Length: 75
Image (cartoon, rainbow, N blue to C red; front, side, top):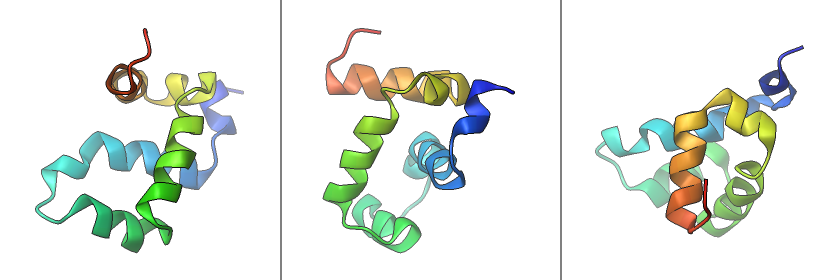
C-alpha cells in the first residue's frame, strides 16, 4: 500500500486545492468555505497538521514542501 493512500479523500482534496487555488479568479477564503464547509481558520489548522505527515509529502511533495517553506519550516 502506497503511503499516500492513507490520506482521506478530504485530505487529498485539500492538497489539490493548495496546488491550484491561485489559478482561480475567486477569493481563497470564500472558496475554502464553499469547498470544505469550514471557516478559513479551521481549514488552515487542519492543513498545517496535514503537511507534517509523511503520507502528505508522498502524495504531493512539491506542494507540501512549498507550504512548509512558507510556514518557515526547513525542508
